[in-house]
Length: 364
Image (cartoon, rainbow, N blue to C red):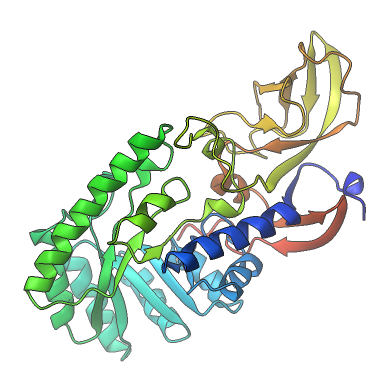
């Protein structure tokens, strides 16, 4: 069908831009000798995960056990849960999942480590664990150095867990606008990793994986000399927030192309220099600000409500009419994806497929 026939609101993926992004990151990581393990929380879609793996990704990342379950059920065979999994019920599901796929998980607490080992032993399963260190994100993770060593040594001595490496993600750096400031954040993160690696080495512990990085900082992790696995996820789509980051000459980053859009249409033109579209709070995430409009830079989206978005058309009078269909660039791609059941994959103005978002609502 023609794209104009797609009902709204809909989540569109422009296949030409999407495939360019896939290839670009696959080449970048391959050329730098980095493993790519893209974060599936960005897309929550087995179709996309399997395409990433077909281009050389070693597997994917997930944030929740339920997210990993949804992807493994549909053929994804290698998942790192870049989060702590707490409680017997979730740990039992994690161990069950590890019987069907290669699964690793992060730890930052001795009690959690012991409980995970107990559950794994009861099912005769061995699981790789990564010690998460706080490299400045101020979220989960133990402090670099000695606290990380304590956890790594204990993991290595358990019956059913294997110390695999370090999780070192600097989330706060991803949307720092200035290039030099983003690089400085990752330089500090890399130094914390180096100190920890040196301590582990002196205690005879090998660290096969140092994983982290994101779409906003991946050039710095790949150049650091300490990271060997990259977790970037949003690069496949991009969003309005990532597009505000600047490169080393102070202009907009063009590493990746915008491929994700919310398709909407004008449902009312009440005058007052405004038009109303059918994509509001239930169709877009607003935690990173308002969406922008593809092709219409002089039209501003503002004042969303549950089912409506107001467009300020004062600088583009007469451009829109009732039923006009528009592409909105979400402020934040990940939570916007979580609002939809499927992607509408389009190329050259035609629909090529529908891709189920199997991890939608996977919060357990």
